Length: 193
Image 1 (tube, rainbow, N blue to C red):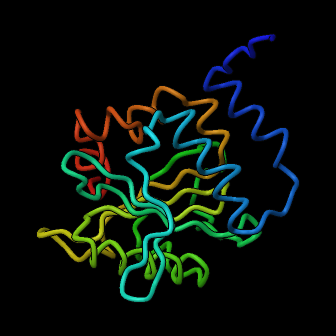
Image 2: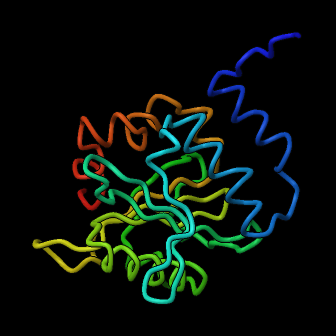
């Protein structure tokens, strides 16, 4: 038996890009082929902390990322990769990562529908952070705040999975399992300017 060498996080992202860059994937394939790989192999979320397909009052949450005591930390709604999330033209084309107010983002109908859907799941699960992802674009936002209306809060927008390759340390420090659990990275980065 030849033992297969485990790929590094960067090699994993490069492989994802090579395999799926030009393919149209349905929602299930977007989840299983792209999002699962980023969560588990790049951001190091243990599989037992990720709940898939959770039914909430007749609806289905795609991902519930859990922390200590099984408490939901982040709810993710996935969309097929051909669902286009149009970002504001003010998004700096050079940047793969930027903060943009939820209010601006939800002027795009696809983003608005996905955001409102996952926000409802997060509220039902008493979780303060939610995200939408179409396999390329990730939008992570705070569901509520005591300081201002949630729509006025800045969301983190990752424009492309290139971010995970070119800014791996930043990605892990923001969304990695240990960063979220031990460094409270969501509270210190999302919904704040």
